[in-house]
Length: 378
Image (cartoon, rainbow, N blue to C red; front, side, top):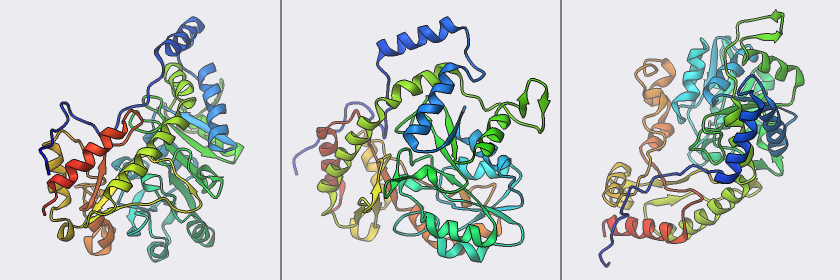
């Protein structure tokens, strides 16, 4: 193979979707002229309405970030004791439980979907269990029907971490339709964002009323505070960015799909490197392009491939490593034992996310794939 030059500058795993400068200038001018920068102003209210419509949910509340949103959801659902969740997720999922004085109980994942294994959930339910917190990993929906059946059987709440699943549908049914509440993250690294931000979606107007109260210090009206809340409000400037980007997110998803299909085409024949395919009946959103490395067939470990890509200025990510169950603060939990989480531990050492975002072009994907072929041992 001919000599291959790396990228001249770090080629990051993602770049944020950006609004057009002239549109941003105009909307910022209107915000400043309104003299209202926070406290549920015009932009926040409009963003909630448009997001609810886009995500296909009756009720939606925006927050300053997804982690605070998860904590508020735990309080709103009156969760207590133990909550069953996945170790294969970003730290915020599990930290939100701990900050809510809840004990995370880790459940192993499925090897194909990388999501919580519903066949293992019932064995972890005790008299202290009050909820299940599954994650739609890399935007792939969990087995929502099985999870709901278990929740109904035992009287448990279901709170979905849908941070990766913005706009995903199952047989034309929005992902936000499932469970008691779904949390969406609007961090700048997501396919849709408000710079920092998040949202909680539900189909219960009384629950939304409680969510709105809890994000505003527990205040119901000017003279009533029923319970201790927090400050989870999104400001008008970030909401304005969200309104502008909502008009661009579908094009972002379509470009990511095109690039994902190209990656699959160029990498499918590499032994020891597994690419994940679309699932029939699912409208995917392509938040990441993750591959699974079998070190014996590929000739390199996942970590070795990660390091070799760095030599060419390709910035990949070892999602999700380490597992949450291996964090110092959780590793002593009975459910965190590696023997109880064999699939999750194996997966955490074999998944690598490659660069994917809407500003990439065909030549970028081709170059990354050529580099991967070059560094793979013959």
